[in-house]
Amino acid sequence: MQTNPFTPRLFSASEYVLALHRPEDRVALLVRNRPRGHTMQRILAAEAVASPPFQDWLRERNESGADMYVTWN
Image (tube, rainbow, N blue to C red; front, side):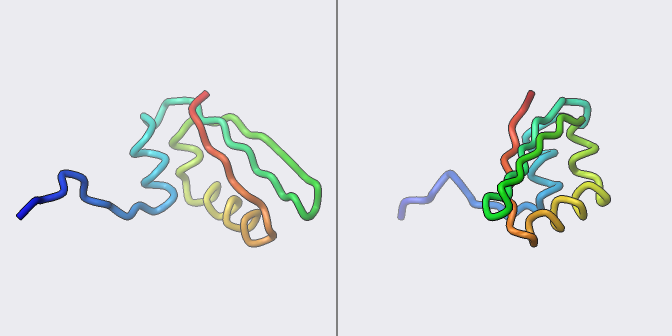
């Protein structure tokens, strides 16, 4: 029997950001709402992006139709 060395793991959005970045790392976030033609960018520490208030803000943007793109800065 062959085993897979890669075990999928499920992360919350906050856990995902902090799994990829140290809390003090700068993270670039693009929020793009194509239907509304609105795009905004934020550059923050990873711990700020992972914080509950910022996650709530992102959730509201996503529920209004926006896509999120996250990368290190």
